[in-house]
Amino acid sequence: QVQLVESGGGLVQAGGSLRLSCAASGSIFDIKDMGWYRQAPGKQRELVAVITSGGTTNYADSVKGRFTISRANAKNTVYLQMNSLKPEDTAVYYCNANLRAIPVLDFWTYWGQGTQVTVSS
Image (cartoon, rainbow, N blue to C red; front, side, top):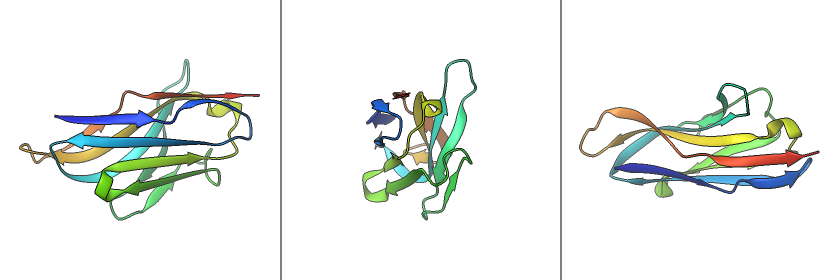
């Protein structure tokens, strides 16, 4: 059984910073892509950033230059450093991972439970 657990959300003033972490645990064989998504009230879930196992990254235009995604492969953990936060960044942030778990060994996408980020103006 695989679990993704996020941490690091909270309340911050505009211009501030937060660092989110997401650790994958369980019977994991390997992890391909890991990413962060967010969902604001009344809006669809959207991609924030994704990172491949080789370290290639991709960002939503709205966060480029402010957010940085990274991962520690040995720890099965992905991070999201968020700087210069804006009120419009307020959302529930979800991590996901495309991975193979023992004994299935097919790639599946797993999701964390989400962590709230609130940016006050």
